[in-house]
Image (cartoon, rainbow, N blue to C red):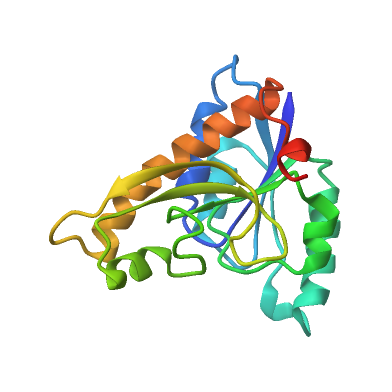
Length: 196
């Protein structure tokens, strides 16, 4: 059984999909803890699904490195096989990458390497492209430049707003994430090999 720690900043919509998938007794992974960098709404999913939560508030630390050191300590308490950044809206410092990568993955709402960074959906619309996508990557010390695990194209429709486009991307991100967790748990995907 693959042990997962999921880190969030917001409502945890991708996390909810993963928690619902793992209710199936046959699903080969379990979320053992949910962490956040703030008082995120998604932490309520811990209570709903009976999963421990922890918060490492970024603002409680003098700098990113100090925050990262505490984040490492909190995550390691749960001895995860895989750490998932699921809407964690903060770049993790190199020490976090060094501690967990390549077993540190992240969803991104664009077809990387197109539109990296915090505003992938907005940037795709601003560029006037007719398609964007969703990606799942191994986190490294670049900005959304790590090895690609999976990705899928999504059309940009006439009249799309940032919100409407993002609403179509999110289900694809969830599907890619859940499939990758299955593939890792079933030894069909080797993150170490991918990250070489």
